Each structure stands twice: as C-alpha cells, then as structure tokens.
Image 1: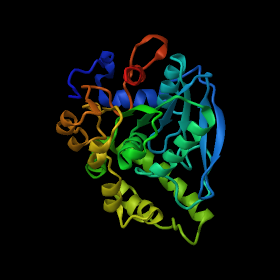
Image 2 (image 1 turned 180 degrees about the horizontal axis):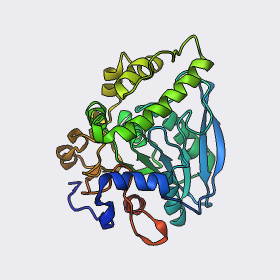
Image 3 (image 1 turned 60 degrees about the vertical axis):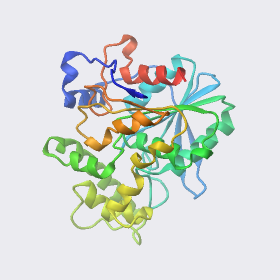
Image 4 (image 1 turned 90 degrees about the vertical axis):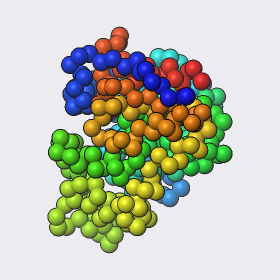
Length: 320
C-alpha cells in the first residue's frame, strides 16, 4: 500500500489496442464546454508563461500541465479541466514556454525538469485567486515536472496543494527514450522531432550567436538533447539531463497524496517507469497500472464524453 492492484479502467474493446488508444483522442477528440481566458504571466527572467484559465467562481483550482510539444488546448488538458469545472473547481492550463503559439523570449524554453516555472505559476495562482485548495495534474512530460516539483523541496510545498495526479509519466527518462526509439514508435518520435527542430530553427534566427540549426537535423532525443537541450539549460550532455531530471529517484520525498497512473501497454514507457516496490513502501505515492490506456489515452464511453483519467483524477483528489 498504496499500490493499487485492481484498476477500474476498462476501455471499449477496440481501444484495447495501445496505438489506437493513443492516437484517436489526439486526432479526433473534441472537448466542448471549456471557455479559456488567457493570462500572460511575466517571469523573473524577463520571459513569459501563458496561462489558460477556465474560471467557475470556485475556491478550489486545478493546475494542469501538458506533455512534450503539447499545450493547454490539447483534449486531455481541456477534458480534465472541464471535469473539474463541473465538480466545483476553477481550472488553469499552464502552457510551457514556447508552447502557447508564440516563441518565448529566451534561447532556452522548457524541459523534463523545468520545475521553477511551475513554482512561479503556483505562487501566482495562490496570490491572485484566494484559493483554499489546489490540485496538480500532469501528463507525460508535464507529469514528470509535477512529480519533480513535489519531490525536490517537499518542505516548501504550499499547504494549499492537497493532492496531485500524473498520467503516462516517463519517470526514468533514459530507459523511456530507448523505448520510444523502437520501430513501432517511429511515427510519434518523428512528429516530436519535426516540431522540436522547427522551434530550434526559429531560435537560431532569434539568437544566432547562441543557437545553430544548420546541418543535419537531430532525429532522436539523444542527438537533440546533446545539441540543444543540455547546453541551453545548463546540463553536461543528454545523459546528464536525463539523469538529473528523472522524477523516479525523488518520488520517496513527496509528502502530499500523489497518484501516478502508467498504463501497462504504454509504448513510450520502460519497465523502470512502473515503480511497484517503491509504491509499496511510500505512504504518499499511489501507483495504478491499468492493463490498457496507451499514452495519455484512456478513451472511455462515459456520459458527456468524460474520459476515465479525468474521472479518476477527480475521485482521487476529492477523496484526500
């Protein structure tokens, strides 16, 4: 305990295919009923973070973080905010730097361990909203950021943060990157690299003295992180970045109830991303590993278009 051995997620039969469960909601799901109001938050280093608010006039708020090259407009973010809105929570989708439709103002942007921006957003939300309770939700990269934020300085976690949920998290980055480079994940990797390389071409025009994008483009995370992520964010190389930013080593330090949901058929994750032995020993880490779900999928046939992940997150947060 708190290892959750019997997950309640049972998808429609056709979505027991991991790739279909991953791809379908990303391409075809439409989430209505969420009206965002954008706020641009200035950061201490002269940059900005765009927040997409869905306010319902509540005294509780969910802060939701997207995955790699995503944004607050992604269906999984809109879906979880809509579910929490209907249950009496305000919601805010945090867009990582350069992920809100406009390049940020610095050579660097965001990465798997960029917790300082989340810390800044949490402080801002608490100062501006008068909220008595905050919940955090992260998906994939955003989930890793949430877990690292909670584990890095647990004594400084604001009292208002009552619980957190994280879905489809590559909490051991190095081995997860080996999985995504397998042939059956090529379409996903190719899509990520196309987006990332396009952004670095923009950065090279903005900061030609710092960023160089000429020559052969990186085709995998190791080459991209060695060339761009590591030097721009103060890491020695890709391996140093992956090691220092993986959330797995600091999960034992988390002091608030936190649910980690990693589907067993998630093709992005390695065996090390399912920390069973750790969850059995830690009072605040709840690990749930449903048989199906894909990567940030969890397609469901629940009423009003709600997905299981959204209902599960609300259930966990409100039971704390």
